[in-house]
Image 1: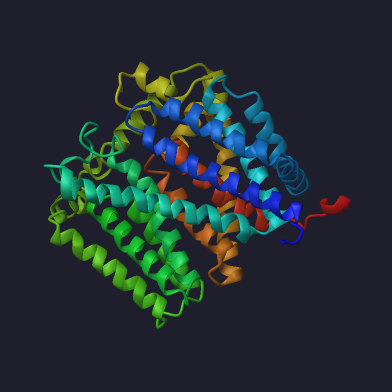
Image 2: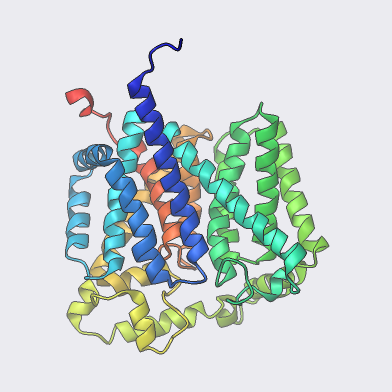
Length: 418
């Protein structure tokens, strides 16, 4: 006869399973809808709804996280809440509000269950899903497509899953450092090491083949910080496996005929400093035109924004194919005005300072330094593309921010009634 079961343990197991399902749904469903729904619908309905389910399911941890942040950052939290509470009446503002609640929820979970027990499953799920996307791309172009990947980068009708290859670059910007971390995390598990090495090679292949220069800059920053400051033994077996995976992924770019776009388009644009318009893929013109249009508004709008999402500006300016300015700073100006930009820059300085301090002080590769190094690369990437506009990369930013903030919080004095 079986002995008595532990109802508490069984209940916790069920809760974990539900949370894993919610996180998987949060990463999978928006990807499947990318080609058939607008970014506004995906951000404001699908992603917002699933994030809210996670927050509601962990409401006790959400309250705990909010109390801890209020204790450590009372002024910052007050300004943030006021800014969002009186923000523009659009689903965009609701996305930011729920994102703050998600940070509270994650921090509460870290404090009660440990960072590794929450963060590790999330990044494993994320890597698995990016691997699934990359595998689908590979099978599609091997067996079903009459065109090459480089022919379909910006073709909504032909490119699998996405309207633009840059959306895949958003995922790969997280996939490469996360899979590399997991490779180093399991040095004695051959199966896991082989799988994550395979992921690294595949992700690096698509990173190069797509010619994503913003993503390349993010990977360069993150990789440099990890290798130079986190005590990585460059003679270790993991480093050799990592380098081999990168070499195979890079070699496949040439073997599969995808190198022409990389060399003749991305590299040529980058080194063509005389033509800043081509070098920025037209970004400078977009930023200049939209800020010129915005600066013609009334002074109230200049201070606090125009109660509208950024895509409304582009429609008014007849940029019908754009919904966001491909720059996080310009996006904040459009949504919250120059006062909002000042506050965003202040938050960014705090985040960058704490991330750099974490790396310099801890000097070892762990969850906190992984989040810190990756976040620094992603923040720079956001200056050239819409990572803070689209819901999926924004969600991963929220996860990374929660780990960094949690590391700088005082011990949990509210647990067990204290």
